[in-house]
Amino acid sequence: MNQVSLAGTYEDSYLQEMGYFSAGWDLAKIDACCDHPPEAILESQPWWHQNFEAYDCSNLETFGESMGYALAKQIRKGQVPHFSDSLSEALVGYF
Image 1: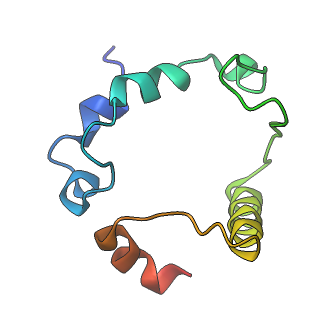
Image 2 (image 1 turned 90 degrees about the vertical axis):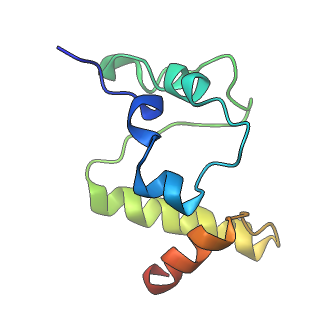
């Protein structure tokens, strides 16, 4: 069975075409950060911020709500997440 990876699926994808990841991002390192068995996904990792608390989202709707809340909180604090121009344009209809 072939293992799916970010690095293996990014090349020639729509995300690459949009310029989602800036040049120099190490996709293999991102894959390594996400390469934990499902039962260990909430276990604290050494590279996590000391105040970070992972929690389980029971479904995609809950995840979307949590992500929206986190983005709104950062915007309220004046720390708007940086998106590339092409990604921002693609997301206009979603927010």
